[in-house]
Length: 433
Image 1 (cartoon, rainbow, N blue to C red):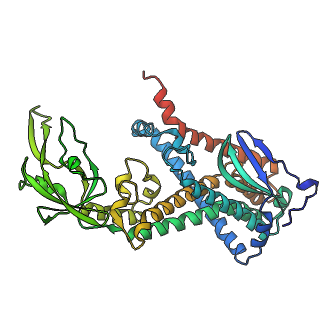
Image 2: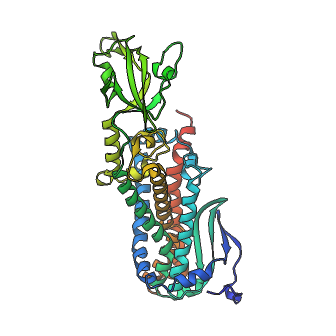
Image 3: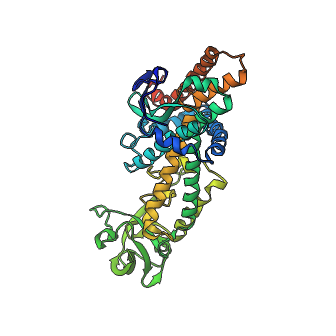
C-alpha cells in the first residue's frame, strides 16, 4: 500500500480518545503490510487465527469468572488477604511499572505488539481492505495493546467473516506465538538436569553471635554443590542429622563451583529445635549438628524440573500462575534466579537465558492474546463482537443496537475486572465491624 496522501474519507487523527482509552496512530510500515498480505499463507492463517480468538477470549472470561466466584466463596477473605501481599501494579504488563517483570521483558512486549499490529495489517491487505493507520492503544498513559485501523466503512460493508478475520488476527497471532513459546519452553526444561550429582546450596546462613554458621565462615556460597562429606558422596545434606555426625566434629566438605572442586575443613556448629505439644503444653528440645546452609537435594532438583516439564498434564495453569520472579514460586521453577545455576542442558551456558526468554515470550503473548480477545470495546475482541452481532443479525440488528449491546458487555466485564483487580485492596481498606 502506498504512503501517498489519501482522500478526505481516509484521513485520520494522530490522537483520539474514547472514555479512558487513547489511540496513537501512524502510517509507517503500511507498504510492508501490503507485500506480506500477498503471501499465499495469509488467508488460510487468517481462518486459524479467527477460530483461536474466541478460544482466547473464553479462557480470559473463565479466569475472570473463576476469580469472582472464589472471592464470593468462603475462601474469599483468605484469597483477598493473599492478593494484598502482592503489589496492585502486578496487574499491568509493563516492565518497570510491574515490580515482578524484569526490564528485559520489554523485548517480549515489543515483539508481541509488533506481531499483533502486523497481523492485523497483513490479513486486512490480503482481503483487500484499505488501511488508514496503525498504532498503540493506551489506558490513560499505559500501553495495553496495538491496533491497525482498517477503513470502517469498507469493514462494515464487507461480509462478517472477512471483517472478523481482520479483527481476530492480532490476538490470534499472539496466541499462536505464546503457545509455541510454551511448547519450546517445556521441551527445553525437559532436557534440563542437575549440573552435578550433589546437594545444591540455595542459601547460606550468615554468621552471627547467636548462631554460628560454619559454611559462611568457610566461604561456601549459594550456587555451590556439596559433593561429599569425609570423602563419601552425598546428594542430600539431611545425612547430617542421621546420628553419624555430632556437634563440634570437624568434617571435610567437598564442594563444586563453576566446574571446579575443592575440599574445606569445617567444624560443625549446632542449632536447637524446640517442639511444643499442643495438648499438654510441654516442650522438648533437640540439638542437631549445623553446617549453616539451605539446600535442594539432587532428587529435589530432578523432581522440580520433571514436575515443571509435565505440569501441562495435570495443572497447565501453573505456567501462568507460577511466575519465576515471585519469591513463593522460585523454588518450583527450574529456571528461576534461585535455581537456574544448578541445571545444565544441551544448550549449556545459554540454558538460563533461553528458558527465561521463552517463558516471558509465552507469558506476554498469551496474556495479550486473551485480554485483547475479551468482548470489550475498543479492544479487538470488542470490535469483533460488534461485527459478529451485525453479521449474525443479518440486517435485523442495527449498528446502534450492536453498539449498545457491545457497550453493555464492555461495562459488565470492566465491573468484573474491577472486582478481581481492585476488590481485595478495597476490602482490606474497609474498617472491620
